[in-house]
Length: 112
Image (cartoon, rainbow, N blue to C red; front, side, top):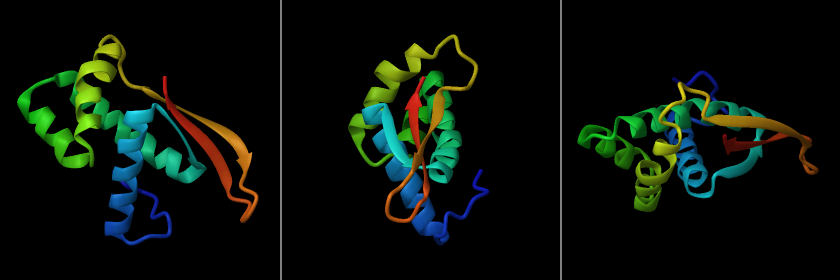
């Protein structure tokens, strides 16, 4: 699942992706670096696919991954039903430019 190291060790990388996934499910749109957005895309797509299953095992898997209970509730009540007829491709990554301090490429990731 994880190809990019993002300059972090495994635990830090997992926590980063969990935080970003939780925020994206709650807010619907985030601005972050391009590499983080690309990595986050696969994580969120898997969570939405679990949300479409809508059984107890899927609810527990998502709840174990995201940090906030509201994100789990929103995924199963609002987000997953919206994508019931769609097979993948739930997120869009749009490149926006470069960060002023370190010139890192930025991107916006949003739910389609």
